Length: 302
Ligand SMILES: [Fe+2]
Image: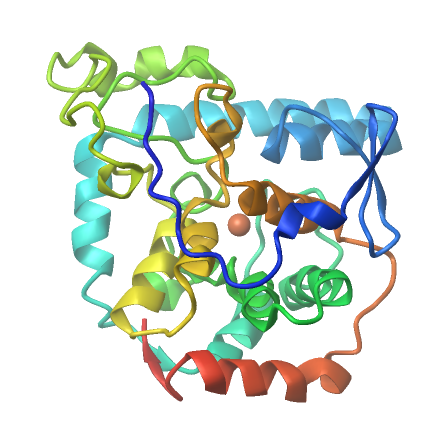
């Protein structure tokens, strides 16, 4: 399936222009982080990264990630996603500020992430601070780094305590044939939609050229946070909303899709900014509170 992407407005400098490639396999970000350059993204990469560090742990992690995707691929059906979108677009569960949600996220454990020793808020701030260091004028991108994973609150009891397969992991379009580029594609044969003629053709319920924004993605924290930002009338630029909505859609890197360069850039910061350097939360908090005030209402409906 070829997906047309309406290019969202990008405010500021071309995000990709300051990265430097050293040979083919190494990418150097301006923050001084040196990372392997690879064509596969997301959990697959995290896994590889893990394998570099500890072979045995890596093998165990590989198996548990595969089991995770098996369940995810079986249960993420078109009907399930529709139900979730209808339910969570009501935003009738909690009322809180963005910062309160950042703190709430500390209670969440993302099982697909090998870096479990750090509280989530530290990862959020590491991502945001790494972007801030390299792109000091793009305050909207700093805030995007901070908030992009807030949808993971779906794992908490006050948000229905959804299982991991319905919250984290790579996302993919539903309502049309599952693309071969999806990680652990073989497990889609156990998804009922695989055999449903309404959903298993190239375009499925969509029409050619309908635009990515009209395609339903598997349900998870990306879409949830996008709905929250939209419904609460965030003034973030469309580029930020695009990143929030699709940052786990790693198949966007497919060659037949003109993938926005800044989404690639964000992915690298998201995946590789977990440095050993601890972020002093209290020190940077006033800056992020000022950004939250600029782009969001004081209290949001979740
Ligand atoms: Fe995420």
